[in-house]
Image 1 (cartoon, one colour):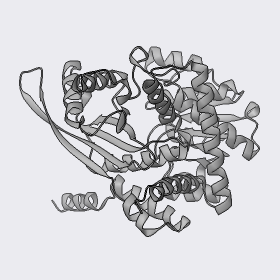
Image 2 (image 1 turned 90 degrees about the horizontal axis):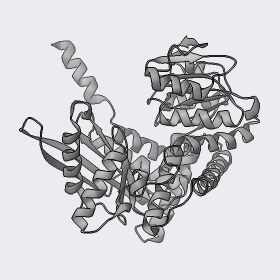
Image 3 (image 1 turned 135 degrees about the vertical axis):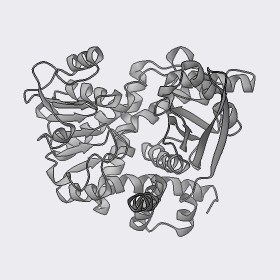
Image 4 (image 1 turned 180 degrees about the vertical axis):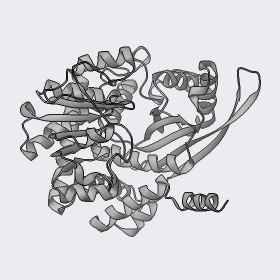
Length: 425
């Protein structure tokens, strides 16, 4: 019983994601000597809606689910951010994620603010029909605060183009006419954008190319290791390979593989599609996810889970450049260690902003009802990511701070300027 009480006390004392988001904001505010009135406004979301959604389950019983939508700041434009389905969704989590989306949109230079949503559920234990009824019920419940000029959701954890199609259809029924721009990440046939699937990985690759120029790394002779072989990891590896880089290690949740002479990324992807994992790929040595992070290489891409590089292993990182494909894979303690070691880190709000940037392009195409080719999307994305990277790099160099705080300063500064111009402060 005593142990249980101690565990509960520790759990209660643990910082929420929202606490961490506010801490990061306050650290940035000190660096830039931010107006206290602006800081006070930015600490909080503009609005958080909590809804309860009754769903008739397949067994005939009604179950009520709790969902949220947090709208952090819309000084730059409509709120933007995904909707996740997960048993661990909390109001503090969506509040934090909506704040981080504000910074991600701002650092990318797109005219959108930050939003995020979630439903407390386990979709892996639900039928397709139950998930559809839940999705439509949630979107009907939040329909008064979303819209193509107000708040534009997108896919996130355990949601995809399927759910976005249901959301768009439900909102269009509510409106009485088609509103494709109310969500992004839709299937191509109902207003999705070319290049959306590859966008996050491509955007990361563009920032790595820019960072390599600054760091004196030749991509044609570079080695790279990629932790996480989902969408972001796969496309990051494919684009890096196209630049001549040698991908020496990749991993997924079941383990990793290593080959000092380089892996054929396409062949590894095909192998994983057949077997469910990269593990046991022919001609490669098996390694753990921990070993992958400590692999000697030029470029390390953590594209799996949060907090993978922390105080316990940061001093063992043997890369020249780290690009965050995942959200929050490096802890604040590890950030400081890597900075002192001279390892450049391209932070998540910059490195993986290619996804939200291409969601922005999808929204623009929906509003115009005019659709671009894949090459047009790629050209626009590349230009946007190059500009964003160089803005952050210049800010970090000028203030002698790491790239994460450089990105935060760029992002917060742009939002605050918009707030002042609008007369909020």
